[in-house]
Length: 96
Image (cartoon, rainbow, N blue to C red):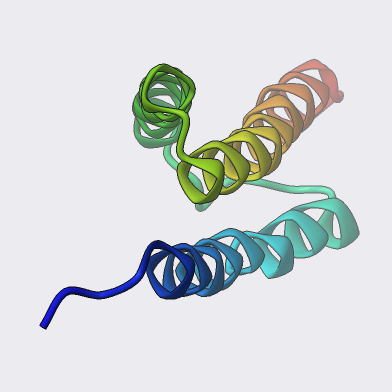
């Protein structure tokens, strides 16, 4: 039995919301602690690159769930990445 496009889109949007919102606590934690020592720069850089490619893919196929999920997730991942770089530099510049 084929699934309607509307149902598939709703399922995609729910999945997108879950996976995207999962990054919010990490952004809040890094911001509050003013530290991202436990975060791998390489991992988040590669994750961000992969998410950007998924965003391009979503744009190419015209999939709203893929576009929304990856645009928002990319924004959150880049925020974490920027905070990681910033707090690492602040920590490195601090007198010991």
